[in-house]
Length: 381
Length: 216
Image 1 (tube, each protein chain N blue to C red):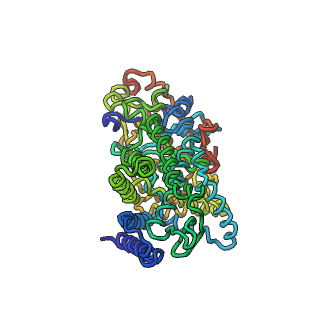
Image 2: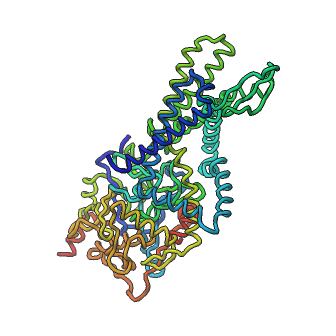
Image 3: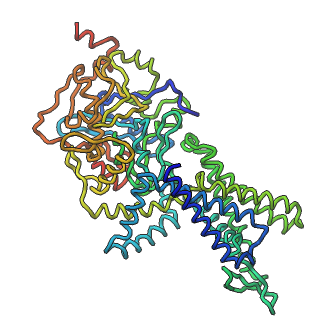
């Protein structure tokens, strides 16, 4: 068994044990733990182990380890901390909370993601504390028209049980289901109609998570329908069915598409890394001499590539292929192939005393050349 | 549906006439609507009309995927290195800078790497990629090995490239002269060349072995 596996398993066990202790603490030694929800609790504990294990294994990959380290170094850089905290808040709000970058990809896609994401967040915020015994409601002694919410063993707030607030609170999962079902419908619609998506999508990676979310939401709504309008018809069966769908979703968390929920925040670290890169020395292409990305990025990539077993080292002044900018790589490729044909097709190279020119895009127009500022910098159009 | 094993993408950069048809056609592809993934450069604008059309070469051991910290780039069983998975890509730019052929693009606003995926929506059902279907000089071609051998008897496909000490094998093939002594294209050996003019009329319009005539 490799060191990474042992270390990741240890992280997994540690996190799971911590959650178990918090469950004991928050439910006051299981005094407020709902025994009917025990299957949910154990599936979440398993998912916690799986997620931590996979996350730790993911972090042990050379490029991920490099970015993880560099991201934190950039965030805690001396003299940048206040600025970084401000940027963290703004990027967190725009990219994570408001899904700005997904709306930029496609507005309908952004809406789809928003509906699913906020539906799931609402559902998790309600169910996890309930399942762990961290949240329960009790009637207020002396005034049975009031309910009291108890969070982590401490009385939090009171409300009349027949108020609108109570209605919205107790039906929180219904609202979450509406959001998720609407989002899933839009997502499936796109996957059925978009030929680009149809070409690359896979059942397990792309449809299964949607079906799971739909099944959880639908069976949850069926429970509400059963006890509200059907006098509890089939309630036990629906409850078991609902539990099965929820547990399957939890167990699937570490393996499939849902894992992006935990990977995605790395985008924030990348942002800080790029900020530092922009403020520091540039790398200069050792073919055309033009500046492109940051020197730090080139050096980090050289180190990652070596660790991965790539041997892009060059003899002579260039030292490493990573010091060659992307347009010069493409030009070198064209030169190598062109040289092979030179004997047959002719063509003379111009005098060699001139400096090597910088290749430029034939059409640097919108959507046809660089796709943004970073490309413009790296591709020098 | 996987890409048929017998179908191959052939690139002959020196046949490119710089017409930009590939760029326009590429924007029509459904997997990256409205944005071209073709990298078409003037190699030395001041001295030459030489243009280099570069598409993803679909490496067997893709450096872009290996250096991706988010595990966002996957290679399918049929050898296609797909563009970044949208939920995973964290737009770090590693792939853009590490690709030995300089192919991927970074859509900064979308926080998403985008690159040629050989029009998988088309090629997986037996159609040609958009660029190959419009390229007038067939610098970009998509067909079978037999058909290519018939059409270009003076050329042979090669899919091994050297970058310094690193050898890379690709699914996409590059056309070199049939009598070329090596089965490898040494990219970095030609790195300091400036530009190469050429006359492509011979094998664009030539039916027979033009080179043979020259020899005679």
